[in-house]
Amino acid sequence: MFKSLPLAARIAAYALLMVLAASIVLPFLWMLITALKTTAEINQSPFSLPATPNVSVFADAWVQGDFTRLYLNSLGITAIAVSGIIASCSAAGYALAHFEFRGREAVFLFFLAGMMIPPQVIMVPSFKLMASLGLVNTYAAVILTYFAWVPFAIFFFRAYFSGLPKELAEAARVEGASEWDIFLRIMLPLAKPAMATVGIVYFIWIFNDFMWPLVYLNDQSLRTVTLGMMAFQGSHAALMNLKVAALIIATGPPLIIFLLFRRQIQNGLIEGALKA
Amino acid sequence: MRRPGRTRFHIVLLLPAFVFYTAFWMAPAFIALLSSFTQWNGISFDSIRWVGLDNYRELFQDRWFWNALYNNVVFVAVVLSAIIVLGMVYALILNSKPRGHSIFSTIFFVPIVLSSVVIGLLSTQMLSPTVGLVGPALAELGLPGLEQHQWLGDRDTALPMVMIVYVWQQLGFAILLLLAGLRTIPNEYVEAARIDGASPWNITRYITLPLMRPVLTVVIVLVTTNAFLLFDLVIVMTSGGPFHASEVLSVFMYSEAFLKGNPGYGTAIAMMLFVIILCVSVIQLLLSGRMRKDA
Image (cartoon, rainbow over all chains, first blue to last red; front, side, top):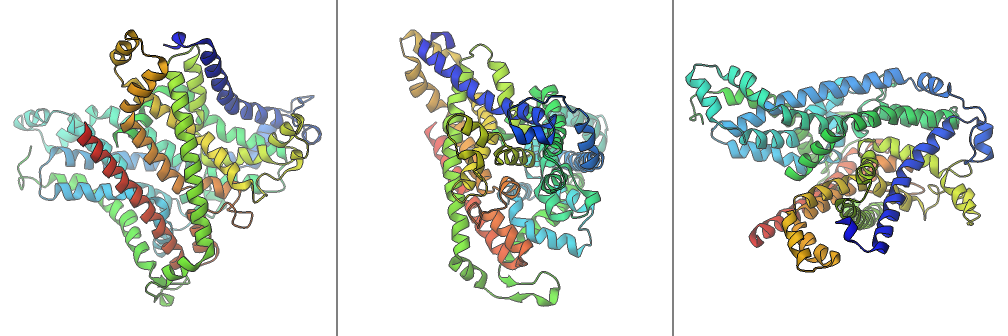
């Protein structure tokens, strides 16, 4: 296909590809070079290379930014929230797909309605609610709010379970299996691909989320990576090379995970966006 | 299928999701609606006063509301056109499988997994005068004077910079979805047209684009909704400044509700945001309904 294009079009296409690729690669290169320079070198010229690369800057930034705590907080909150979402929404999706009961359509529509209510709309009352429950400045506040973020996951699981044959469950029922057995031992194992998709999409959303931690978590010891980064960059005490090194520390892990699980992440995001 | 009434197992399955969702999403949404009709200092419950439509009346007379709405609409219009046009161009190029296309797409998709906070902070550093990358690079290219320019501190450049960074951040996701859409188009259609002597441009114009309408609609709706809800990047890069120049609706709401202590007024702003999102969703439903009729 590409080879059938005229030469000028092919050159233009490559030029466009190079421009966008450069706009993504160059900032990373700049970050790396800047982090390794001394303050004097940074002030002298933004393009020069460091005379002696200062590799210890990453260790300093890790300690000064308190990254061990930030990553533990972020990963802990995200892991609990994502597992909760997968557990509760796979169950709800299965119920909506395989059981017939009065009001089923109404319940499904009720769950879908939340898709039209973005977090910004409930930001203020959610804060009041958590404050009245005494949960502001606790992990519970963010986690409970993430637990409530179900519409997309339910929609996705329901669609997935609808595609599984109901005869499987019927056969097991005839054999005398309990409903719990059917759900936990037959249906859930079959839904692993759906769990992976939902897990990936929610992991990226929640790990990168900034708004809810900003609203709920003031305490320094509770900060997530996004909040901690914001605070560290705002502190005037930190030097430019340290700030940039901290940015590299914050981009590194997501980048490595992306490169390792590229296919799964891409397919998860595509399915998530185009099916919902 | 289970006959109704034979078991109550579905209730057990639905309960956890239902409880969390009702208590921590729908109830706050309902409180948001109610409290947009009240005035409240946000501290003690005794201070809640029902003020009817006062918040909304005040809102429509508040020049900073109109400013935020205007900024938001301009932002959506600019980033939507840029993302759709560029996204389509890049998706078409990648779909024709030039040499190295998989390396290019890997690079293009990187911003998808980075948080807005990291992207915003990185951009802020790159845009900082003298020591950043952008100003000095432009000065080097023969545009002196820009070295010292405060990109994010200047009324005229603050919001445009946020727009550029937003497009940079979201473009990969749009390319990813559009590329997935392009791959669903049967190769035979394109082959048949090519054998009949159609030019690449005509194939794109009369075969590819019409078949892409459903995916394009999804991408347009997603980008529009997300762009109306813009929050993180603005908070990180400009906090809405300088002097409201880059303030959009959710940032305006945040500063009224949390920084200036007017939660009631803040929820009235949130309701306007909700109405906008609702309109986008309704338009999408109408469009997809019409498409189904066409098909």
